[in-house]
Length: 228
Image (tube, rainbow, N blue to C red):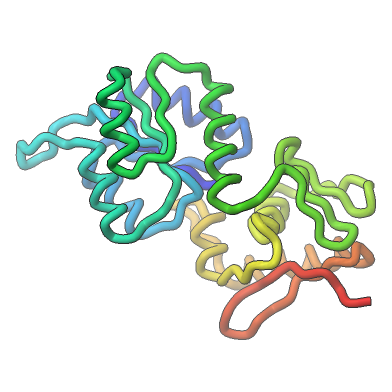
């Protein structure tokens, strides 16, 4: 799960990054509007954590998280957004939701609740449930575990990320570019050769599960149930 965190408080952003990383999420942090807009426009995220009370931009204009949210919604971007702010008044919650936010969490908050809300947002956006099945292959999202015929399949972190992305939800075609964008660190982009190697290893590991990873030339990859 790849998250864009837009938060200017260095202490809070560091705490959130460490806590959400421990929960299996991959975070990219932006402390001001211009960088957040760049990341949000150029890369794909599963969700955005957006602070409203951001510092002034370099040209002296007040930076407002709601303005960025409205801009992205006007461009047709439907990435789930969870607003974070200390301003927990009802009228401001309404303004955030009317601007296109999907959820709202006032500071201070519990980190466990933050992670749970993010998981719920992503589940709703992907139309997926906690457990998905393709043949005898099962992905338990809540436990972050994968099973083949009820036997747990233990995978290295990158292989796990590739397979869970293809299973979120299963049946859809995911392009190489989208996989690379979602699974890369910003300083270390995932190459086509590396991705193909992960796919090759995963195919061997799910043999006999009743599921397979299909390559659609020029389009990407798809997990589908094998025909009898």
